[in-house]
Image 1 (cartoon, one colour):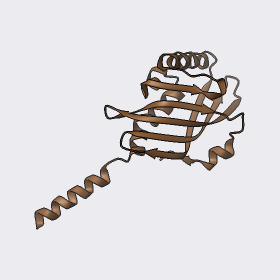
Image 2 (tube, rainbow, N blue to C red):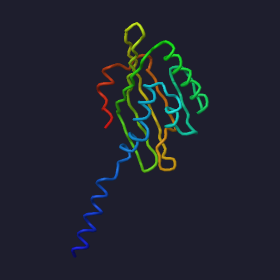
Image 3 (cartoon, rainbow, N blue to C red):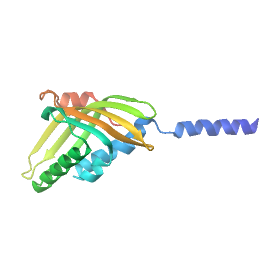
Image 4 (spheres, rainbow, N blue to C red):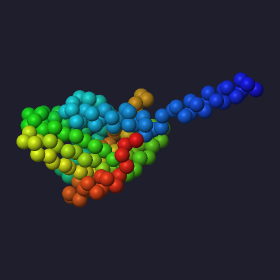
Length: 164
């Protein structure tokens, strides 16, 4: 009986320690995504994306594959560095749905730019992301965003939930 109780306790403690899909996604995707974006590190940024990624910056009416996305990200990073612009990305979520190996996440982003002259500019948009677990690691499979004709604002950002 004592052995049975010990086994049961070990089983339940392992369940408690197991990460939820959202906690895994935060660790595998969002933490490195934000850090690499903020630090203009295109290679690290692209590492959280599937090689099968489909990227659509909907305001620009573009759809890119992995190579096109990497090229755009690398050029954008270099432009910011050349202009001495610093950027800070913050994500908040309105919907997070996940199974063991697929997820859909929707939210609002805020990108704040600190310009070389000391001025700041904030941009907001809504993102929709599909994630897939590949070899035990979550990756971004589909990444779209839009400002929805400039209607996404600080109010929408504050109404969404912070990353947990």
